[in-house]
Each structure stands twice: as structure tokens, then as C-alpha cells.
Image 1: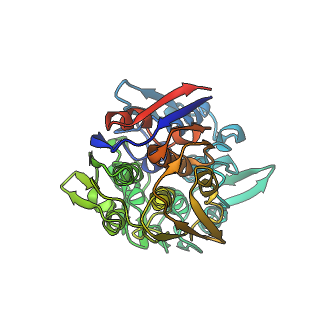
Image 2: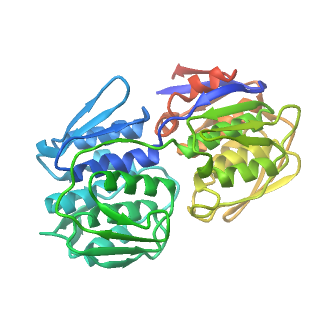
Image 3: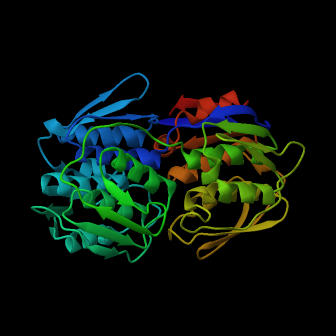
Length: 419
């Protein structure tokens, strides 16, 4: 198992290209099961979670072809079974996204209850209740969701809480259902919109994606398509924070600035100069120490939970006291304990972290506990005195494409080494 070695103290400078969004790629790969013909997906990031999803589709008998540019062709015409086994689903909660497409297209699905990052409960009851309202017969037994339906029927679905994967799963199920489905209290994330645009390109009838009310008129079948995934706003935000935390000057390209409003507001609060164009954003913190910022996570378009850990790292070396309030997941502060090992002054009170900024962190061996936590430890390592060693970086490989290469091209002293 690899680890990262980072020698801190370098102000990052330069330009980095943002990869396709993991959180859009995974539902789109699942959505390819809905098409009668082959689907080609472009701008796909080379990530562990993408590889896991490809393996999951392959286990079902789906033909998946990947070229050297990471264009992925998915042909579900060869599917043999409608089963998502525990050994794959336990490593990635997004595997639950095959439930809706399998049930809608093939009338059956046996999907393991999910695993993934240890950041708290993300129950699947909303997925199940929605499918049952559309006429599915669902039993949960032996750790599996076993769903059957001749043809799903449109329904009005009012989601108990805002859930991205729940919205996506039910939207995918609804596109082949008989009649109209309306999803109320739907998630509004850009990745939900990207999935909707992909489905529309295949012939689906969807209105309202990006609002809290999505209406879907079911069709009999969907056709193949070529579709490019949108850029990853969380990767983009992480590199912008890397520029700010190191008192550097970083430009990200192939980005969507309109998806980064909440992040850019907080970077400006921290004292950075932030500029943007059609497909780029630039952060300039040269000659300045960041100011502490307060962060409270909430569903899009508010501040994203997936950027909470990165701003916590920024606050550890900022001037002043910052508070971080996590409202989405109840167990997403494990990175705080690791940053304390590097000298960070952090007090935890329930779902709130109070961070007293200090001038310098000190390098220490630390361990990644989940995907975004690992990113925060990389950021902390960039500003720590000495060499930081980060173990269990398989978490970071789930969501960041060649992070050590991209940071190195910005001047960071970082390398991947075998354990």
C-alpha cells in the first residue's frame, strides 16, 4: 500500500487542469445501463471508484471498453445478471446507483447494502421508499436489497431529506417508468444536473433538474449517446485552497466557476484575491497569511460538505479563530484528530470544530480516514515544517487523479512511495 511524503514550506505557483467529476461519472456510468445501445463517456477521471464501477458493470456481464484517453464505452446488451455483490459495494457507497437503472430497465436488481467512507450513516431508506411508491416489490434480506417490478409507475415522491444519490437513483428509475414522476425536495447539485443532461441526451424527458422539484415523463426506451462529464468542483476547490494555504498563486483550468461560488466567497474572506473567467479560476495569496474563516456545511448551493476538511486545514494556519460546523454527516471530523498530531489547535464540540490558527504546523506521520480527510492532510503537509508521511492514501485515489503529479507541477515537494 502506497503512502505520500510531503516536505512543506513551498508557496505553490502555476496552473493545473481539473479532471472530470467523480460524483458525476459514477451515476452516469450506472445510467448507461438504461440505454438500448452503446454509450460513450468522455472526460472520465482515472480514479479507484471509477475502476470499481467498471468492475461492477463487468461482473454483471456488461461490455466495458476503455481507451487511452479514458473514454469509456458501456454496452449493456451483453448483461447476464442483475447483481451488485457486497465485496464491491462495501468499498464504495455509490454502487447503490445501479439499483434504479437495473430495476427500471430489466425489472430486477439484487444490490448489497453499501459501504464506503466511514463518515457516518447514509441510509438507503429514501431510495427504497421511492421505488416502492413507484410499484416495486422490495425485500431487504441477507444484507441485500432485492427489488422486482414488471414496469415502474410514475409517482409523486417527497424525499424526507435532501439526498444526492437518492435523487439520482429515483430519477434514473423514473425515466423508463409509465407516466410522470415528480421528485420533491430533490438535490440541486451540479452533478444531478449533469446526470439529467446525460439522460436527456439519451432521449429522457426531464424538467427541473437543478431545482428542488424534478419532473420526469417516462419513455419506453433510451438510446446510446456520447457524453462528456463536467469538471470536478471539489478537486477544483481543493487546488484553490492549496494555493491559498501555501501563500501561493494557483490557476485552475477546465473548471466551472459558477459551481465554485461558495468556495470563492470563503477564499476572499480568508484574504485571497480570486479572479475567474469562462473556464478558469485563479487564487492569489502571495505575501499574505490567510485569515480564519467560519464554515457551515449545507446542501448545494451552500457550502459543500466535501470542502469542509480542506478549509479546516486552512484555518489551522490562519490568523484568528475559525469555526467549522458539519451539518450533513455526523462523523466527519476524524481528520481533525490527525491534524492535532501536527500541532493544530482544534477543539471539538459535537458537530462543531473551533480552530485557533497557528503560524506553522509540524510534520508528523498521519493516516487518511476518508476521501476528503486525506485531502486536508495533504494540504496540512504542504505547510508543515519537515516531512509529513500520509498513510492509507487509497482513500485519496478514490477521488483525486494523480494528486502528487498535479501538486508537483505547482512546485510542491511531494512523492508517492511504496509502504
